[in-house]
Image: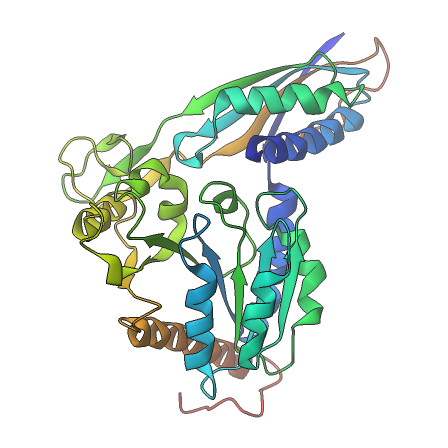
Length: 126
Length: 240
């Protein structure tokens, strides 16, 4: 399943971030998923549960998925805003002559970690 | 205690890193790489058979082909005088940059012009995994739905070209090829179209000419870059 591969890659990144901060546990992971990525949020959440169950650092963590809409800048009418679903045509005038601003993201935005009191602090900007 | 950390990293950053290494290597050498993607049964392997036939004597090509199981496709493609290697993924629904990196040596050669990667039959997952290619090419056959570009925007968005296959069957289904093109263009205004029949040969020369032209342009760019750098390549034409 596609979302399972994505969840596994996500888990590797999250574990790396957790290790960098000396975390004992990961509580929450925030991901941004663009509408053009063809990813199903429910399947991704399910994939995350499967992967996290096998990794003690991630067990019980919550995956928070932020859907990012498709926004474009239109060269025809000059407007910037939501595209007309399901593609990238201008939501105002329908022109194909657009430049993509958002909608292709597949990013780990932030993680919420349990770190020991007075233990390893953050190393600095990630 | 709870600590919130901003990460701001692409989920597939490791795959992207490996893909960029591949891309850099092919850029330096002037190797043009195509990543061919479609649903199962759209005609990828047959199109590549017809393509390799027509490339003989024009480009030195090699092929990596991905499938969950069997070496069937590699066996078919191996009949045209080019090095071919099957990548068996087991259960993974797409090729990734790590797989390409580990199988590349089996087909590579110093004078390679063109690497074709036939991806696993799947319109969803391959779209997310950069293989370091110059261009993704998506296939859509006339026995599929003409609204597929709208249903699978990711791959149509990321492809440089769309090849409509099985055009000899137009009229036998409700597939409206002009509507399919319009749908694809609404997802990707820049996408280039080819209409082919692997059985009759229609449209294949135009498709292959495009591949040859793209590969030639890549080779020329590499030659210019080498000419501008420290060590000129012996075969680079300084007048180009």
